[in-house]
Length: 367
Ligand code: FAD
Ligand code: UDP
Image (cartoon, rainbow, N blue to C red; front, side):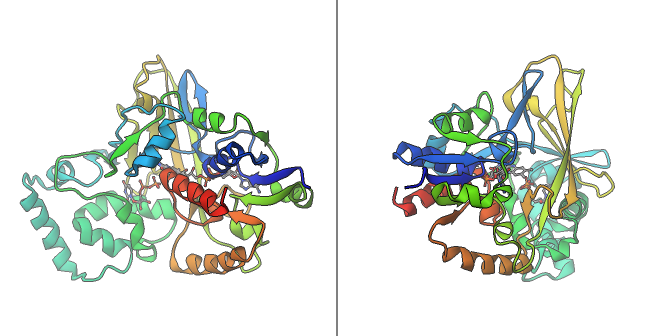
């Protein structure tokens, strides 16, 4: 008999849900994380009374009522609706691409006029079947928006040309012919009142947690403690990169406390020109309508990833996806290891998707 039913590697959203649900069903769990805090990338640090999203802006959104009810059972969510703006060389545009954006750019007033403009620009390039992000973007919004609001942002975010990126990345963003600045189409959206940490703290209330513990530093010892392992780190690292390294994109976050009550008037400003080295500036207090005297902002700089850096984004192009398939094949043969989360499944998951997959994984485990 081993001491634990499950050793869970990673105290992010996936690992924490698994631990919480398994514990509820009488399973004994140990959760570890190499970081010195729980929550993974949704972790917030309280600075000047403001919940600062340490690893980038996190806005919860879903159309699945069950998932919405699930997160709200841990903490109440506020009515925050993400309406970021884009700053291109000092010009301000509304996001996502909608009638406000089209009006500012072209002076068009009606949806018909906006559609006409886009069609005209698309026709000039003769794109029928978009093959990459650039062609997909031009097909959706035309060359003017592509040049000012997409190309520069995308190429610095991903460190490669938009012609080398998969089209699906740009399809994350709505294109709307209404005057609606809501960044998401989902039915439910908000920020947990009091911050994301409250959710993870509740989930791990009755779970043994070992922080600053890297699985790979004591692999054998840790593995021997439990019947099964739930692994939410990098799947290629788990297999010692035997087929090669999957590529990721990393980020550098620069947090600054400012002696001002309101710095930019909105939570998220995207800097879409290539020359500005960061992609976004986040002003955290606006997520929770904070009235503090000071404010905290974060500049988000995309950076190249190499082994040892934080792997924030999987790069789901064809080359990496086919390499992932090889690792996945190995993983399916494992009887005692379950892979989950953004890194374990090498997928550009948002939070609601991670929750869906975690609950599904528990169902498949039959617990
Ligand atoms: P993670 O949160 O990455 O957790 C994995 C954990 O495993 C980490 O804590 C890591 O330290 C630990 N770990 C890894 N390897 C080891 C090891 N060897 N030993 C011990 N521990 C290990 N989603 C949204 O829905 N809305 C948003 O607005 C949004 N914004 C985002 C912005 C950014 C910049 C990023 C990067 C992501 C964003 N996401 C957003 C996605 C969201 O962060 C993820 O869907 C979710 O947090 C993933 O949870 P996870 O448990 O899979 O991974
Ligand atoms: N994007 C862009 N301009 C913007 C915002 C987004 O070109 O102002 C593109 C960019 O390629 C980005 C993708 O749309 O990677 C998806 O944006 P999202 O905001 O969903 O990215 P995330 O929050 O996941 O980093």
